[in-house]
Length: 86
Image (cartoon, rainbow, N blue to C red; front, side, top):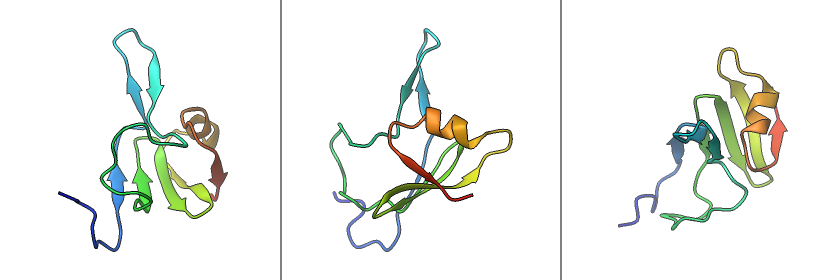
């Protein structure tokens, strides 16, 4: 089933990184997806525990930070280039 067919806006709510048992992290927001996709180029916004990113035709745009989080924290924990718009 295609969960995103015909919708006007797709918002993804997720943890920004995956924390491993050994304390290390895996970046979850990457430049290119390696998993099977429900839809291609359909996500408009990503809301995580670190902030809010809009997905534009030019890439990711940081539009809001969670309390106590810096733009550098988001950049460090994201595997794709980010435009800062705050």
